[in-house]
Image 1 (tube, rainbow, N blue to C red):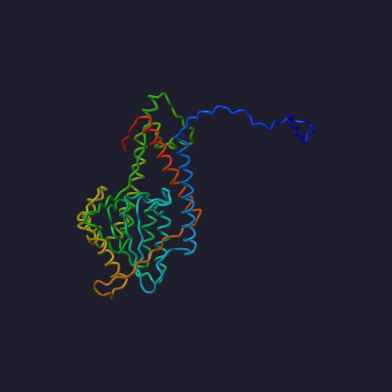
Image 2 (tube, rainbow, N blue to C red):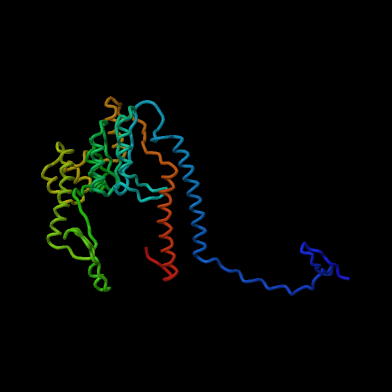
Length: 347
C-alpha cells in the first residue's frame, strides 16, 4: 500500500517507494560558442583588474617615497630631465605612457634648481614640438634656473623641442638628430565640399562676423586668411626672438636669418648657424654637465644622476590607465570589426 506523507498544509500526498521508470538518455546539447563581444568583454574585465592591481602597487611605492623621486646619496649630482614626445599640458593617457606633461617638466626643473646637491641640469630632448604656450613656459623655466644646464638633442629636437633646448647654457646634438624648424603653424580642416555633396549644411548663430573664423563648414575669406597669417607670424616671431636672445653671442646672424623660413636642419647645419655648441653623443653631453656642475672635476670624472619625476597617486595612475586602456580597447574593437568584415586590413 502506498505511504502517505503529511505536509505543513495538512494535505496528504501519496508517495511511492518504487523508483520511477528510467527515461531515455537525452542527447548532449551542442556547445554554444561564446560570441566575439562576450570574449572581448571578459578580456577587458581581466585587463582592467590587472591595471588596477599594478596601479595600486605603483601608488603604494610612490606614496612611500613621497613627493619627488630622487637617488638617495650624498654629494653633487646631475639632475637628468627628459622631454619626450609632443609638448602639451595634458598627457595622451595610459599607465605606461612615456610622455610627461609640460606642467610636470616645469616642476622637475624647479625642484632640481632648488635642490642643493644638484650641480647641473641635463635636459634630454626627443620632441617634434607641440603647444606654443607650453614650449614658451618650459623655455622660461629652464632659462630662469640658477643651476647651469646642458641640452642633449636626440632623434628629433625640432620646433618646440628646439625652442625649449635653446634656453640651455650648452647644447649637444647627436650627429643624426633633426632640429631647427624655428617657426609656428596651424592647420584647418575644410569639409565644405563634402557637406555639399551629402546635402548637409551647418549654420552658425554668432555675435560677430569673424566669430566662426576657421570653421570647417566654409572656405576662408582673404581677410580671414590675412588675420590668421598675422597671428601665426607673431607667434613665430616670438619663438625666433627668444632663440636669438638666448644664443645671440653664438649665432651666425646670416645663417640664422636664412633658417627663419622654418626649415628643419641637420646637426652640422645647426652647428654652423650657432644653434648648437657641439656635435656628439650622450656621453659628451653628460661630460659637459659634469664640467658645469664641478669645474675642478678631473678629466673623465663622472657624477651620479638624480631624477626629480613627480610621484603619482593611485587616482592619477588609475585615471591615466583607464584613459589609455579605453583608447586601446576602442582600437582593438575597430580592428577586429574590420578584420571580420573584410578578412584583412592594412595598417
